Image 1 (tube, rainbow, N blue to C red):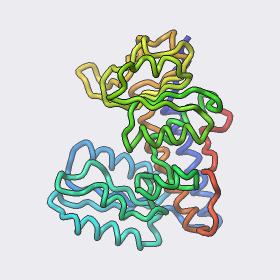
Image 2: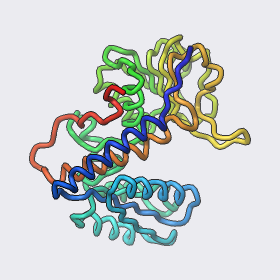
Image 3: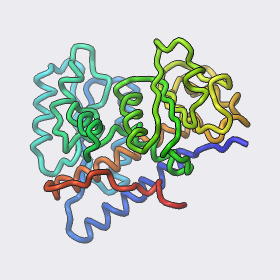
Image 4: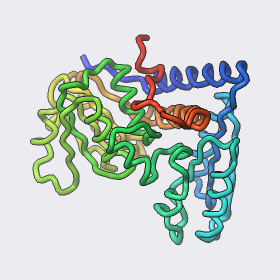
Length: 299
């Protein structure tokens, strides 16, 4: 029987743990973490996402710093806001909501965020720390996937993991995080000629392609853990990159869409903001690996 990994439950456990840590630090007179979100333009989906992130910040007892800029903002205007927030000691983390209006260079603007305040874990400096195995703020969605696998008690050391998708936001950092946990990792993408030949042997399959219903029974090893990062709006509601119903009784465990990976992204954003505040308070020698979050602890 296939077990459904409840991302909402795991995310809530993490967010509760973060809120307790923030409250404990406040009682001891420590700094209160603060997240600055930057929204450029009025894209409806981005507006909803930022509102959800700001709500999570307040629920965690953190400070909510938000900047809303018009879609006509120039590169220099957005850069000036980032630079201002970078110098503000009350701002622990900075998040530039993507996508940006077409005229703006997202990569250049993200790289203006100091590595210690990179709440999304997307700067070139953060990617370098991840590749080198040094402490840093990790991309939220891949970090959330690791937490889901830990919560489901999926063994990673010695496992064969396949990551389908090689994007900068999920696929590439996902492969790095799995490697750091001792998995043997294969990455597949749109140029892979026989996808099933790559995914079928995998004990852990993470799918982040943006292709609706790409993965079915022919791609999955019986008993494998399947993590579906994709999300698509259809006339039947939200769907993922995996044909979930067809894997019932085949996959050992699987994340649903919605309610799987999605809630974890905001939860890990809260973890990153808390870690950024701790890093700023003790910038000397940070730990070599991020601390275990509540989701990895026994239920």
